[in-house]
Length: 251
Image (cartoon, rainbow, N blue to C red; front, side, top):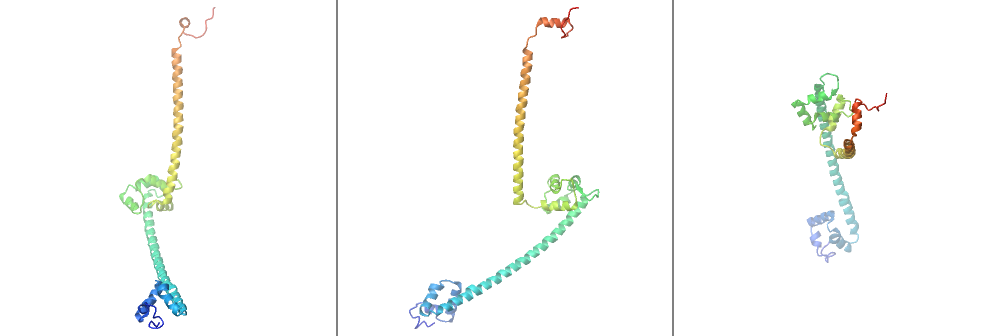
């Protein structure tokens, strides 16, 4: 670009393309798309219209081509590293799961006192009395404050005894903090219990009112019987006949 003759009217020509470093910085400005049209493109195209093809081609190759390739490579490397981290986390979780299964097997065998291969509620509550067992389950984020309630959660089939598979699956299901789905399910269950309790209270009040009415009616009947006078002649006749209510017949 000849800033002295062809672009003498463009005051920023020497500042944009005065030497090689300035030209390179101007091209870098084109790549960033910072005022590339008004500050650089239009003054050049007004004098040399064929430079439009050069500028657009440069933008397509650099901004929309080279930079997208660089961004794609960075994103691909990031995803690859994330996948590797995910694989590492998965292997770590598998090793942790194996350790937990071994621990659960040890707990199950220690609790199965009769060697039947199943665990009932009494055996489960008894084994949870030990501090080492409680500490082991607490490290797995299993609530151990109420052993009987915990066994009821583990015993999904309600057979009053569980095998090792059911025991391990039950412990895995109750560990950790409850999820949103668990909280919603609990809210639905509590709402159902509240509705049943409200109906029970209404029925109890109705039965109580009915009992009060029956008691009042019985008291009124007793009061009316006590207030009815008895004839003295009839009383004397009843006494002479030995207190019999049978009517007297002449011989």
